[in-house]
Figure: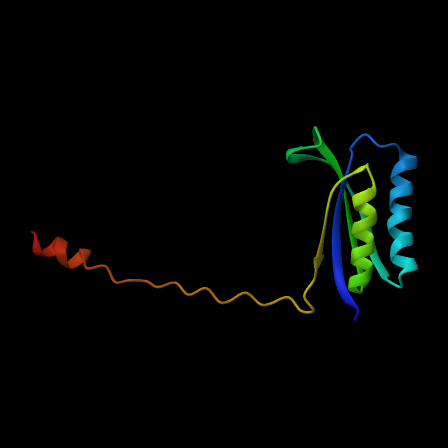
Length: 121
């Protein structure tokens, strides 16, 4: 069953151009070899991490959006786990249609302060 997924990959910030091209080619090959449909592969650049990961304060972020089945996710995460250049990754299944936010209801309570202020005079 084909579902929509997105994956954020954080790699070491000091990688060279060849290593970055190799990583993006690796992700693309995994998706293509398992009959996935790659929609987007974006390099978000180097950003500061919320906390140190493997003694690194910064990381290069990649965003991958694709359609695939669960077997592809398992294989992609297995290969990312084995790569020493990858600091962290997270895959998320996207909903078919985003849920509409519930309308905000603001309960306004009539303040008896006006009555209390006039009664004390």
